[in-house]
Length: 127
Image (cartoon, rainbow, N blue to C red; front, top):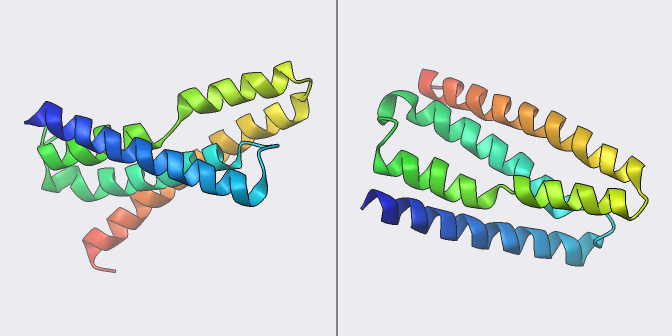
């Protein structure tokens, strides 16, 4: 049942990632991987929030934690896509865009995971 939960969460996260990146590309173009940046930041916020909320509520190997964090967030976030898109920017002779993608992804995702964890702590305290 655990494997199925992780697989189902991963499938849902992957579909959500695809939808988000497609919507962003259609709306803002594909010159910069804005969709991938968005899902990585949102995914970092979500994983921080879930880890903070589930820290005392669930064991590390519990089905809800594995479904949400390992499955959904693992399928939703896109470090491999980020890496490939950064390489493609470099190969296209756009080192400034590649550097901006790396810097924004690292800074915003770290900030988002911290914010999610802080939000979870505030929710545990009741406000």
